[in-house]
Figure 1 (cartoon, one colour):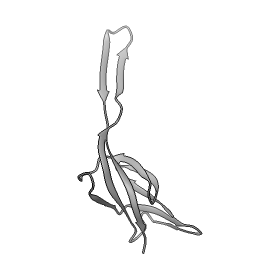
Figure 2: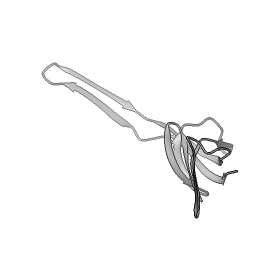
Figure 3: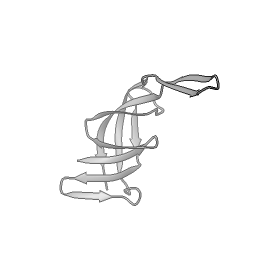
Figure 4: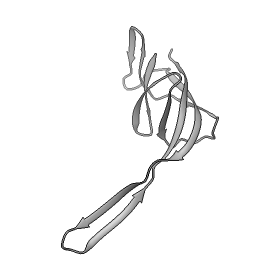
Length: 104
């Protein structure tokens, strides 16, 4: 059984027991998170597609850790104009483990 969920402006295909890194969520390490924006649920031979969400479907997960990703360097330059700008960015993330996928 798997589901497609939406969190942080992105979509993820998840199954029970998986770990994945999503955009930063509020909650302490070890706390439970319920994601109710479920776009699709597939259970073997049956597939339920939402319009846009599947009614009554929920995915529960546990927060494993919080962290920050690798640094991305942004470099802007205009040739022959003596303009250079360097900037760095590190995106925060939350690692979660999927516990259960439930549908009504």
